Length: 254
Image (cartoon, rainbow, N blue to C red; front, side, top):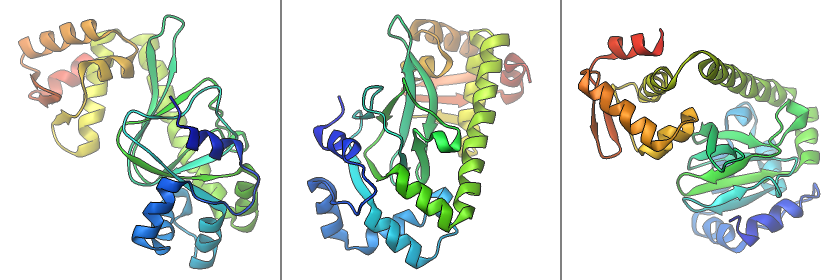
């Protein structure tokens, strides 16, 4: 469930300087006013901004916190506003008619997400869930428009980010159209291991993997056991070691 504090923030976006919720205000009090500015400067679409504009953003964004497993927004609470993810990771997903999760994207720190029609990204019908403890700044739609008008490079960075996600989404759609569960799972394992630059995947349960490829946990477990039997991987608790990347790539159709 979305916390009442986050709901109040989403309902209160009016393009004015924002007051922080109590938990976020305590964080600012502990680390000082530069804490928020420092994190904003690391956000991918804001990396070209100078100090005065970052200070303006700090005044016009609301910092919220979300604990691991907490929903940041649901279909009923989505607003036309970007969320600037600082520390933490977030999973965006939809639910099928039979209640199965279909993961749209897993986002790492220092990026932007949310419902942004002006940038070609609409999240109606989607859920955002904190995969770890998160700190997030919320920017109103009017403030985003003012920011882009003052600093057009932000729009270019935003389009770069959304464009990359579209490329990734097209790859997922292609996998669903042309690959069975073994091919999709092999592709996912290669992608997840490539993100860390090592031949292993850590921190994902069989249920997590199933949700990322639109399958069932039992099917993923059987497929992993088959990969293990063929000498492609070894499997531990939330840990998969890739033993034969070329062989796994053949299963993935690469």
